[in-house]
Image 1 (cartoon, rainbow, N blue to C red):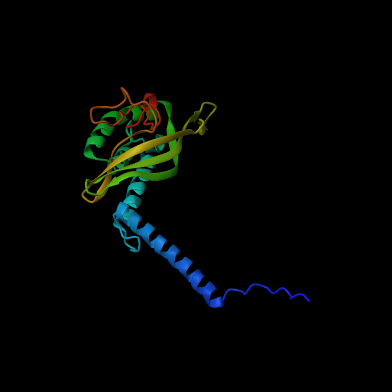
Image 2 (image 1 turned 90 degrees about the vertical axis):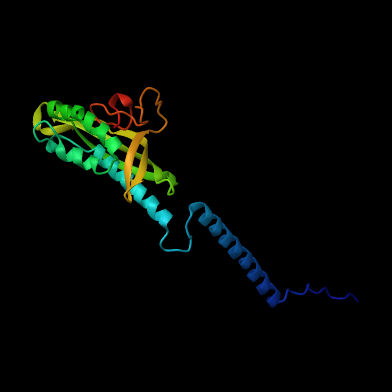
Length: 220
C-alpha cells in the first residue's frame, strides 16, 4: 500500500506580506537617495515647490525663445521711413549693452534689405533647452532649435508675398544676469565652424539680414 503524495506546504501569508513590504521599502529608499543626489547637483530642494534653480532655468529658456522670435521677425510693416525703430527697441530690450552696440551698428543693413527689396521674415521656435546654468556667476547658455522663413513681394501682384523654403536653425544663446534679468550676450550656430566669424567679444557679427544659421547671412 502506497502512501499518497502530499503538496508542499504553502508559504504563510504573513511571510509574503512582509516580503512585499521589504521590497517596497528598498524601492522607496532608493528613490529618496536618487532625489537627494539630484538635489545636490541642481542646487535645489526636490521636494520644494519653489525651486530657484528650476525658476532660473525657466527664465533662461523663456528669454532665449523671446530673443530668437524678436531677432527673426521683421518686415516692411515695421518700417518708419528707412528704419525699423520698433524692431531695434524690441531686440535691445533683451540684450546686454555690449551685444546691443553691435546690433545697432549693423541693423541698418537689414533695414536696407527690407526697404529696398521688401524682405520680411518670420520664425518658429520648436524647442529650447538649458545647456549650462551657473547662478553664482550669473551666466547661462540655452540651445534653441527652430526655423525662419523669408518672403518677398510677388512681382505679379504686389498685394501678395512669395515665401521661400523654411530654413532650420540650431543656435546656442549665451545669457548673463543683469539687475535680476537674464540678458542675451551672444549667440552662434551650433556645430558651425566659427573660425573667422566672431568678433573680439566672441559673439557672431551681424550682416545685412540677421540670420542665426550662417555667417554669410549671419547672426547679430
